Image 1: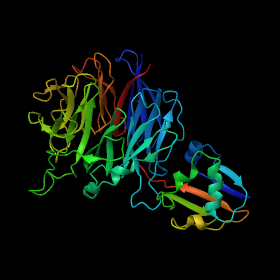
Image 2: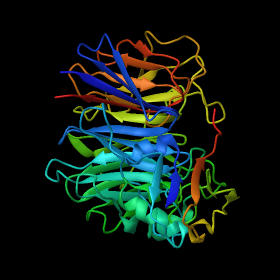
Image 3: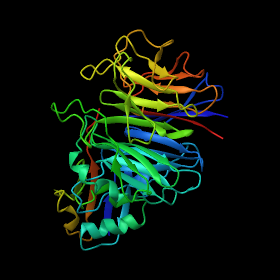
Image 4: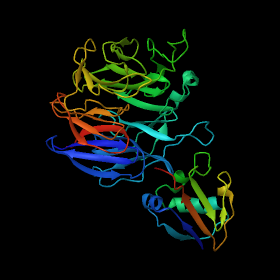
Length: 355
Length: 91
């Protein structure tokens, strides 16, 4: 079985394929000169989906039925003509579960959630999220006012997060949403206002299929974990070299294992002497660095969607930097191999095993 | 007959020719709506949700550059050459 690593960059989608996860062959780039913020494999259908954000022709959600050899023209998601906001970028695409084969979700900028129930032929807004009264607390982060994470669980539960805005949960398939930010600190707010109901700058959420209510969060300052679907959060990143960062990744089957890529500080958003993936195998009590094969000094950063795994055993891990390098580990993160360099700025890395 | 010129990349994506001839309509909006029917989504790619031309595109009828807000209401006549141009910016 081939592994495909899809690398979304400022100038298109680059795909890398390997049979043994050692030698890699580049394919593409697809959508040349066009920012691609995300690309995923829908494991139910074998269709690739990509969020393509043209500076000229707007955002679109595109599909490929031949692993990227050709792409359709896609659908341009849009709010209504009288809406005060516009859809300017697609940030996230998330296929739903196997029992809803045509359903998938998309997170967009300005922060909002879309759903397709026909395999991506058409998309419509899940309106309850933007109608939540706490929406007035949302604002743009440096990357934009974006809904970047969608985690469907079963038919009815959806976890989602926007920046800045916070994490939200629906338990009725998007008919209503509740903020789940209790205990999440918004350090950029004035003293006395740092634990609001919403408005946190959540950078990424990730959960594991084996225990989907356990969710990991990389916040704008602080790594957190919840074991109850967001009702309560525990800060678990205090022993990391820095608790600022963008991606967080849950292990696909071990709920106690997760990965982050710490940056030096909020005001110094690079890894400098510590570029590495840090992993925990005890639910965040301790962390260890995985740095073998990585440069000793690097001023690169890794953005929120720049870290992924391929689901295989041993687990393959992959990340891409803002300076255009892609690193892969085929042994659960014991060491790293640079499989691409000098690509455009990398927005996302998504790995998939092709049947 | 009205001739419509589209950027190559857009024409390729939506599956129509970069240069195509179309029956005359009363307005540019009507003309492009008719073209949209035979394409894979011309209008959503050139218009924002409120109907204005996307900011990094320009529309010309002959030598007249159209305003973003009112471009779709511009009258077109038989023999007109309509040009859609994308910005040449980027790095």
